[in-house]
Image (cartoon, rainbow, N blue to C red; front, side, top):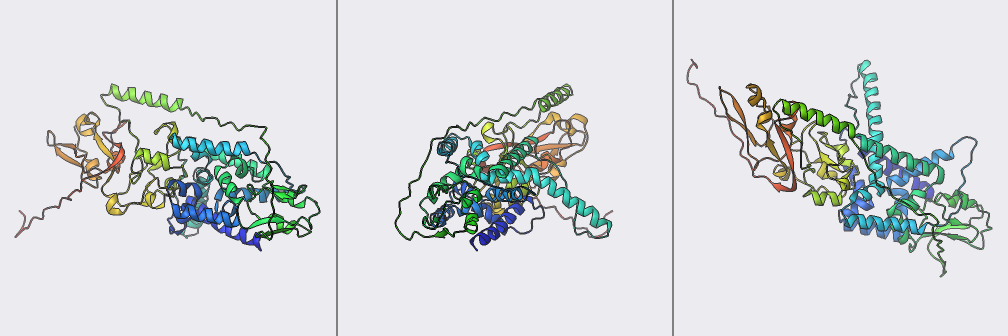
Length: 506
């Protein structure tokens, strides 16, 4: 029953977390709390209650987190299940000594990277964030394409339960990293079971250390065991040494697969019945894990941007390139955001306006894949607080609508030389019409025309003006991000004066 209960609970949690990343209909938000109980997000957001709960759970039951709560761990179990279903081939594992130096070397690397501000290292190795990138960048386009196929089929029959949605890659680098993560972890799970969890995952190493002291463990009855080795061949964690009748509890993930397969019933998940001293053996690793930096070159986009700039400058226009990237509203400051975000891309997936995208080099190499605000496909809804509500890491702090209305993530910049009113002497005013705070107003210019005038004190940086500006190839208005998010001054909405007409108006 332990194995069945573990599988049922793991499937439910895996389905809900996966739905968090794939869903585009905003069907409830209760399942978002499952993202907040992940280990690294709880650690970075200083959620002491969640951290204490996970530690107590590990000290009681061992690495239940890795087999039931962690979506990446469950994903590996699914791959392993498919590997076992291959026709004509039986899946056998075998005991392997722990790679202690590699495991703790990665933990030390993550700690040093955190204090050095290189959160990208943690983002690459955090199992929850890696799973999120896989779902958002690889599987969500497939999911949306399936939805569009159903929409076409049902609409042809007069049923409009489904509706078409836009399908596009968020960014090529994030897709490449997502597909490489999927292929790497998928291959390791298919071939070697849980080697990722027990060698490369820093969360697995930390919880593995705690699980050595857990109250309930899978224990071997040395008198009943006949060294047949069946349990060792079924252990996807490769932690059962049947010859010495010992289990490496730092790697055991409590999947309970071995319990049902032991014909002598020598294995049980129990509390210690008598005082026994089991020596944990550790051999030095013969290989060292080498982490290579990822250098992404974008030669073709750079050449296109330079050609665009040359053509625009010849026409008297100025570049609208953003010098300061914009972090999501509620992220406090760029420093706070970069030190807490693990690039799980949950906010990118759930943003209803599609203004969040994975960064390339906007924040520098330490911020690769972390979300940044871009107004290419829309603007930040004035009343929307979705990203701050669902962030599990504390990188984006919760905001009420009232707080969001005065949170200034950036300031508007007006480039007169690019404006259609200035260049073509034609009426426009699109930026002013779409500004929710009236930070852009139209003032008299010449020949009866009006031209934009900005008030940065009441601007919140929502990007409505930048999104709708028709100037090409460079916009006349754009948003520059604030390094530290500020508090905008409240604005007073102008009321239209009503003219009372006593008689006919002529």
